[in-house]
Image (cartoon, rainbow, N blue to C red; front, side, top):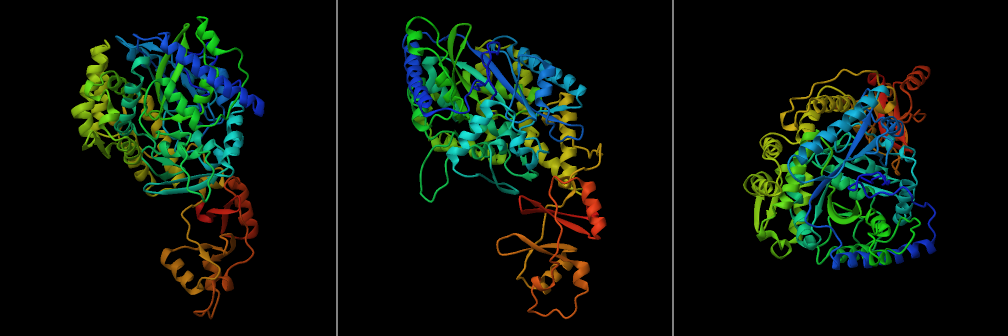
Length: 627
């Protein structure tokens, strides 16, 4: 999601990133950039007032993020090598070394525009697949790669780019501490992390639509209003680190993973850099950007030459580098953008909440639905802000992220299901919008059949959840996740939209597990050293558990209860504590330790298990049975 950057050859609807970022940005330079922001606002206002921003033409564009995996289905850390092998201007790097991005060309919205865009997308994906085969790397379109582990989220997995490292350092500085992540769905995930790389778990299909500058307020507010139902029907990211969380976990994950607001004991209201917003947009695009500048501090900088306002007055079309740089560090789920293409300025809305995958045709169907809805907006919805509560719209978005297409929506005074809203109102509006734009009827029918099939069948998230649960029966979680990724790849290659995907099959591993993390058990029973030894023994018998880690008052491991050791102890009473009977001398390992090394240690020391620690914290246990 943190797009890599623009070059002079990059398509005009590419991402907001910029690689010419300075990591050591002085206070004087920050002050200068702030002044340039004001110059850019004045230039934008001048262009707007004098009719210098393009209108009367509609273009669409998109950014495709995708994951790289090895033969087994684990993250492959060779993005830079694949980028070099592909050698195509449409490809660019992403935040992590296991992700890449494709910037599609902009297409004028008419005729077979969606077919042309899909053909280009599939052609570029095929190029990546062919070059990937040479390096034993495969690509996956999915909102969150199920096999990502905490190991791939350490800072050394960050793409070596000045922009990413500058952003990471600046956000850590603002945070004044570790980043915290807490999400609860069917499972629960609570973890702290020291960098922004959790954001790299997210891969999306970011969609761009050029809009009329005079229609900004109504168009942007309408984009906000329709976000919840669209997100629900497109959800494709229910798993993170093996936990079943939200149907679109990316929404909560992205907001928390780069939340730079420091945690304090004071009750403060401060807008996050990733958010849906706090209210309806009012006024022009200039008014919108004024609010963004007021709400968010400048965190990245670079040298910018010239005065954009003077350029605008002299008849040039300024790029507004300072404004675009700042806007690129504020991650609205619907983000307004200013761009220049072929010497003409334009405005567009970037839809950032749709996940990648599961297939190219699913993504194009999502895009056709969004674009059709934007263009087909009925007159009665021109002033959405006067007829609908913004908090209802925001609530719709969060509910859709949590439970997908089954969520209830508040829609202009009514409570409706996403399915009913889609069938009764959204699809007719979208069809009308595309027809008025001159889109081929065959494209409309073809793509909306996918949406209707999903409404009557299954979404990407539903397929992943249902099959992950089945794959976990009778096997370890790691095996289930690997099988899931293999199936995702097989069905993606088939070209079938997700509503037609059959049940996943268990895949035999290509190779044996190599690290402790691949074989350890993570569902742990643990006891405190002052707990009753007799009760601990009874629970071990009830649960058929042979090894139990013992923790002290601070939660640190301090011993081990083993069934073989307990059976030898005679005369335990009700006052006997775990500390009296536990094994004090214990050996431990880490998730990244090679399994062969662990096998040798257990054999040499004649022990049956090893607690697994990550930075001193107990995260699993590995026993002889796990081999």
